[in-house]
Length: 446
Image: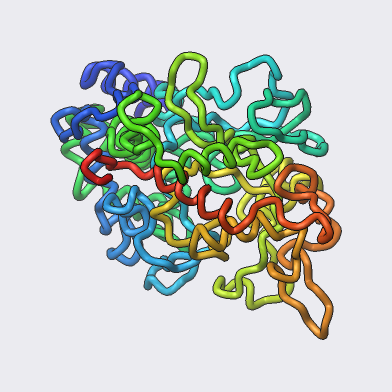
């Protein structure tokens, strides 16, 4: 039986022998679609696993059920949360994000960022850490401190901030850990135990894994499951469809297209630190080494979006989703009050194709999202419910944590007498710019 460390090294060796290191590099804008022949043998297995419903307790749910390849690996329906479990009748707790552009996500950290470093620069997911035996810890502990003020175009402030990790709460450091979590979560693919999952993998993929990793993999449940999770991570890391960079904005950055007047106005508002200030978190410029922008700084924010009654868990008035503080994250980070209510900033790539927005899917259009940013502080009655004539502001976060909500960065922090930071015309222009972030652009679309 191989040790975990041995399994990891053999996995890496197998990958390197099956594909060049360049297989995981970002494609040039406009590069032709990638075929299965371009994938390593490990990633090819991962592609098969991704669409295989027999790996779920229901026998009807695969990764692709929620991460539809036809919708940029995001849900194709407009449910706030997706249904899973043994009978596909258990609702999740959060909106399912897209799996595109996850390769650049760094592991979760909580510490001081170097203010002289290139904003938004992140290392690709490390292959060596995604083989069998990769660590399964959630990150270091830290004392909670206020997050730094964010301004578009400014370098990160030298203050402790949570950053990186996968899921809305960063509880997985690698794509491998993320895959394992989904396979066993009771309201997702819901495998009851490792033995059951290993048996399914052995029956359908035992020969293919044995060819790559040796015959002993069939008899070692842990090794088999770890290699399967690694294969899923390799598929997401290698396959260009997870990071195509084929949006109109990519073409603009390459000098192959121009923004329309409305799109150009929208980008200016997106960047303006006194107006949209969107680029403070959703970085829209190339990194120092020329990598395309990811449209996220991978950091965490408490925005105070309204409670979503469409989430079944919210029928319980005592239930609350605190992001970094649980209910799905359980470590030292989750015990720090200063982290409660904070969720990871998602990439805005392909945002115009999404059906629900924010961690709780409370909004179903970009128009609603921009209205929230414009009016949350200047006109809160337009955003939050009232009960018995009393405004229930920040109704999805207990009062003791509401000090974590960002009230300083534009477009927030405006009193009613100040008016909205963004007019309706401004909001429409920003939406026009956001629509340029959808992959699959062709000049003939104009």
